[in-house]
Image: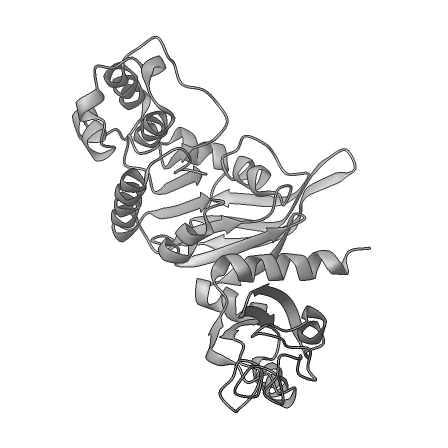
Length: 330
């Protein structure tokens, strides 16, 4: 494969009635990339994949796969797809179905190799209608990788798989990317996107909201996590004095804390707060300016113990980005 653009969207729009499922989408994917496609329900992920596979045509703009029309790439065997929609032939065995898939692929691998790579050899003689959900997903994966495709498109590929099957699946996908193939997958398992993807695309209302590495997406959210245990004063007691209250008695301290807890209203008044969770003495905060928030904690006399400040995980960053974008909508 030459180093070229594997997939190109140029100002692509696709609507259904008054709804624009894809709205002016421009992006390019390259050989060897593993790309996660994220977005809330209704963001346009499925329509984007349909356009890429030639299942739908754009109302405006152009979609190219390896420099040509999407359907041409599919017919030539350059694209393998594992989609949520569409069933499997169920009155045949796993081996029969995989052999059929290989027979139809213009660049097919031997069926035995396809079965082995998908972890299906031991159940090759089982009828498809007797498979568990995870086993059926592995059959879909086998069909998507039945030939020497240059682009593999996966829609929620590990749904129904157990942990071991998911790990084996992604190990295989890494091998595919290492061989120069482009892997594009849509998923609701954001920990998979964080661990697997070289690049993360976030869609929102049909538009590309964010595009970068997982680390870049987290940084773009601009929010950090702060966690700590409350200890209301500097004198060793949980609320200031040696026996608990600000003067050693049971009364609450001026900041509202009592017995190692604090009024949520006091915490919600902290600057730059974006999220708050209080469980007994343990407080978890998300802040747009962690330094200012921690400084304010001490200013209120809360004296946090076991203080930790860290960046958001990808899931939390995703929620923060999409929530902020949604807040801008009329």
